[in-house]
Length: 405
Image 1 (cartoon, rainbow, N blue to C red):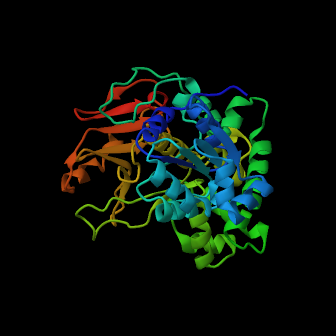
Image 2: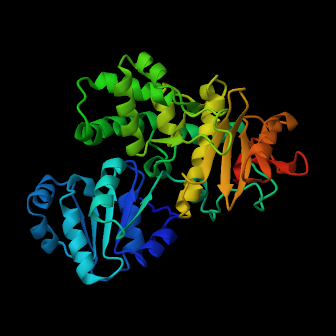
Image 3: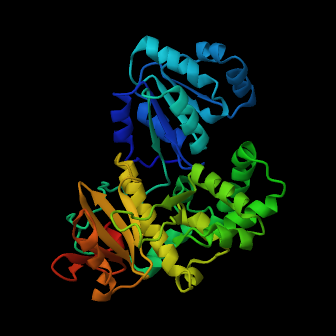
């Protein structure tokens, strides 16, 4: 398969110059192994080993010392979460060697992997998530973290049809590279593999059908606030189980929880996060949409469009080495006033609305005035939509086509 160059390569090279261990986490099939190999194949003598193989996994778990003797640094170790026993010994080795760029680890279970890394390799490992391909990576364009003050291309050739084709297809590298592969075939195999290889390692599921129903209920609520009681009821499980299973989706990199803005108006704000499925193709499949044209005219089209935009911005910032959790929020208060996305950068907060139409008008700015109550400086705003061109709405806010972000 052809390799699509990833923006995050530059950030990984930077990390390898300052840390002895570099860890790439993320959902299955996002390209972690290919990325690591492509980025660090210039290192003399670098080796690759995957713990997907049961015999190697068993060796790593039962005799980690021998394993690391067989595969000395510099080395890429794939699926490190299967053998956390390696991490304390890696710590000893990097402390003795005192060289950066020695161990390159990948893992697809972020929560458990991060817990083990933080306990064993604190201060020695740099960790970064990897998501599916961004639209700029697919198009071979430079990636710049979005802000309303950026200099944009003036026009966009994206239409409702082209955008929903992208939403329906999703962003997994295999789906982008293999044009003959149908989303239904890919996603069906992906979900089954995810349950068999990740979920069964993390928790006991008595009935696969219950978990499938649960993740379908979650996918149908993309771009909505998390309501565990509602999800649990629709999935036919108790709320405690729903909470635990949602944590699994987050730790696997399939779902992102966008925090609410808190600031200095705590009493008024809604405190529940919003959930976003990080791959829109999987979200469509799990919520039983099998046709892009039907999806674009459906009642959930707005939520899917919002998911597409928010996840693209998450990928942009992550790919450029920027911490999303300290920058991205949404706003909603008990009066119903809501702003889809707030980006906090250098003490300035930028409001962003997302609309699935071509000419949203000034009504889209109606809640931007709440920024005057924030402790941060209010920045310029943007309405990201399907407009064919960038144009001002007023002195501080503009329409931005989705095709230029």
